[in-house]
Image 1 (cartoon, rainbow, N blue to C red):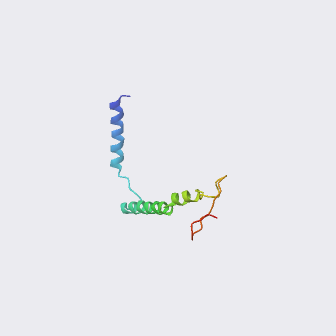
Image 2: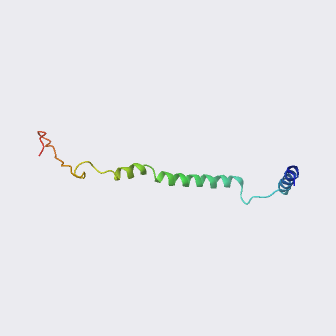
Image 3: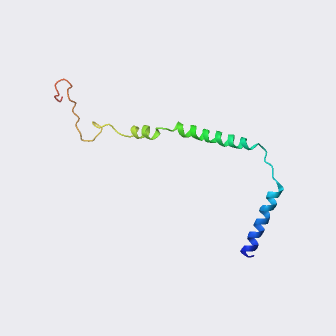
Length: 84
């Protein structure tokens, strides 16, 4: 089948579908309301995970000090600055 015959067959089927006048089960604005509700639901899901990376990143960092092997941590006296 040639390209011209294929394109005319596709065109004829599209024309037949357009002429038949298919109906939709709901008014058109309801489809917009459904899409808007879906987008709001997805926005709420996305919003629930805000700042999650900062919370997880903070949890995995170890504080400096006695956790380091072989490191002797000496605390400074806040009054005179000497180490004990």
